[in-house]
Image (cartoon, rainbow, N blue to C red; front, side, top):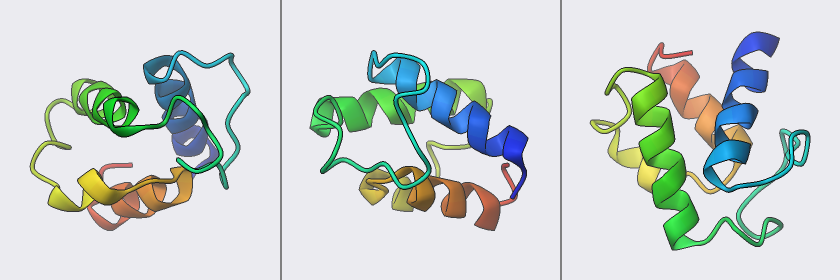
Length: 81
């Protein structure tokens, strides 16, 4: 998994959750980030889908991906990132 992928993903999530740049780490998850609630999860999915040209919406497992690491693993498994 490339560093580029990780940093891009964290930047997308930070923007989606309206967080300060650098607020997320690879081990960040919905339990530790106040804005990462159900609406935040939806914002993340929409932002990722836009960034990856609609390839996220078909991945049902993304709905339950509640951490940066889980999202990275799903993207890698599906050859998206």
